[in-house]
Each structure stands twice: as C-alpha cells, then as structure tokens.
Figure 1 (cartoon, rainbow, N blue to C red):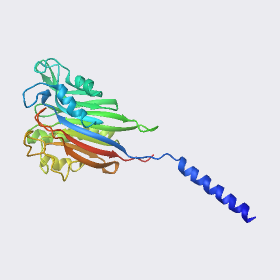
Figure 2 (figure 1 turned 180 degrees about the vertical axis):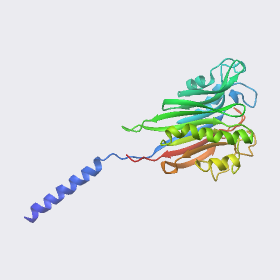
Figure 3 (figure 1 turned 180 degrees about the horizontal axis):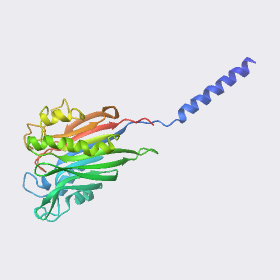
Figure 4 (figure 1 turned 60 degrees about the horizontal axis):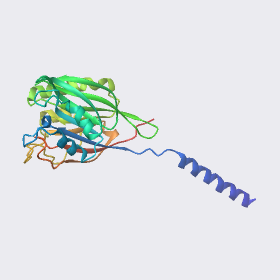
Amino acid sequence: MNIVFNVLAVLLTLCCVGCVCSQPVVVPRRLVVLSYNIHHGAGMDQRLDLARIAEVIKSVSPDIVSLQEVDRATARSEGVDQAAELARLTGMTFRFGASMPFAGGEYGNAVLTRHAITDFEVVSLPGEPRSALCVTLELQNGESPERIRFIATHLDTGKEPRLASIPLIESALKEKEDLPTVLAGDLNAVPGGPAMSVLAETWQNATVGDELLTVPVVTPSIQIDYVLYRPSERWRRVNARVLDEAMASDHRPILAILELMPGQR
C-alpha cells in the first residue's frame, strides 16, 4: 500500500511541476530609445548628409528614435522628405509631425521605429512655433502585443513658451494616460531648471544622476536633450549615455535603454 501511495505522490508532484512549467514566462520588454536633434542633416562641416545621420542611428540599433529639426520638402534640404529618407536608410517605419511651414515645405519632429504605429497626433506648442508628435506604438511581445505612447518633441528656447508647452503636452496625453509613455527630445532645458523641475512632478528622467552633456557638440558642457518615462512602476531604467559623435549634427545624440515591466492582466 505504501508503494502505491508513494507512486501516486510522485505522479502528482510531476503533474504540478508540469502545470507550473507550462505557464508562460512574462519578461520585461527591453527598448533602446534614441533622441537626436539632426539640424536638418547639416553637419559641423556644413555638409547636408542624411546618410551620415542614418549611420549614427544604425550604430546603436534603436527600437524607437525621436528626431528634431527635420525638414520635409524644404528648399534648404533640396526638397527631400527627410523623415521618409531616414526611414528608408535605417529600415524603420516613420511618422513626421510638422511644427511650421518653412522654405517651401515643412519643419518639425519625426519618429522612427521598428514597431507598428497605430495612431498619432501633432500638438502645437508655443514659441517658434514648436510641436510635439505623439504616437501610439504596438509592441509585439509573443502572443500579447502591448501598446505604449511615445512623444517626440522640441521645446522653445524661451523660458515662458517652454513652460507653457508642458501643460499642453499633458492635456494631449489625458485620453491615453493609462498607457506606459516615453517622452524624448530637445527640451532646451538644463537639469534642475524650471522646466525640468515641473516635468519631474509627473515624469522620471532616464538620465538623472548622470553627466550626459549634449551641446555644444564639439566640447559639450550642458545637457538639453532627454529621455523621460512614466509611470515609474511600468519602467526600469537600464542605462543611458551620449553617443561620441561630434560631426553629423550640432547636437550629440542621447540614448536610453529601458525595460517595460509586465502590466497586470
């Protein structure tokens, strides 16, 4: 009888182990985020060279890229749709968001990504004028795709329009505030300054505590380019760094590696 009970106990244990092992293992989704003010492709040598910008982007294999100072069909950029061309050169998909008409075309921000863009919105901001390009991305993660919100923006150099831009971006996010969100761009604000202090009330800074200097490009002395995220419980910062690139644009690109933690199902 004891032998029978022992055999049954072993079988039951194996059965339970099999049940546990059959459960899907949900792991964080790692995302490489790059923010780059490309100066409409004009480098420090005055050459207009999008292929050079594309090589900088490809060197770090990002999942999502926020681009600022992007031209579309302007005279100074020889009529090129720069977002479309960079998407072609990097093998990524794109969305362009115009901030204003310029030189026969448009000037603004763009997003490059390896993920599906399911919708987008361009939020007009005060200043030059400026804008924020807000896109929804669908991340494929096994059988359970997950959506996130990603914002590419370039805030004005003036303190007042820069501060006035923040509530406008927040208002645009209200309809999808349940989604994990990343904001990346040239914020024209230094760490600890008024704009970054306001943003710190609702955003986590992926570059906080690090000396990630992005301008002037040859000998950087300040940081004005950032990657922010929220909510804090859905993201984990892995690391962040500035790329050692001082020719292709007048800004150095800034990169952050984030992990999107599984949400409750």
